[in-house]
Amino acid sequence: MNRTLRLLLVVFAGVSLMGSFCEKVPLREWERGDFKPIGGREYSLPDGVEEGIIIGWDDEIPSSFLPLSMTLFNTTPERKTGIMPAGLVFSPGNSYYQYMILVQEFPFTVPPSGDTILLLPTYCCNEDLDEPDDESIYYMDIQVWEQELNEFFEILEGKSLVGDDPVDIVQEALFEITDYEGLSDTTKALLESLP
Image (tube, rainbow, N blue to C red; front, side, top):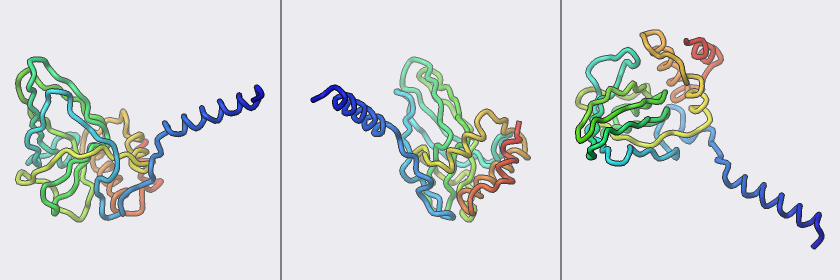
């Protein structure tokens, strides 16, 4: 086999190998108006940290109109820290409640051999379903991983989502994606203008 042919085979093998490592990100895996966490990436809490009850919180917080309250237990004698990613979905125990989602990364800490209650700044994904309340039970699901929502999360990265106006803009933008025709140019500009 001559040298040129060997070189071409090596280049072809390298390109093929790189292609297998490149992750193809789907445009969207659910129908508009019927958001459900499909596909995506698995998310796990740090070793030694266990998920407790997740319910709707009965009041607003500065970064969410409808936060979820989540209890975490640390079964180790060491402090545990972690980050929940943007796109992490929380699935309702009853189908008449909305799916909830984090739109930005959420860092957390759990004390050694103890528990903590987190107020998660979640947003609604199904406009026509019931909002979470203190009787709604939720479960941590997957991190959605798709072009449309990933672009949305990228726009929000590093933005300050504190106060009624930013929270309202973000919620309406999410509904445009999950329930309507997709993110409009006007709404995208509003998101980009957030501090």
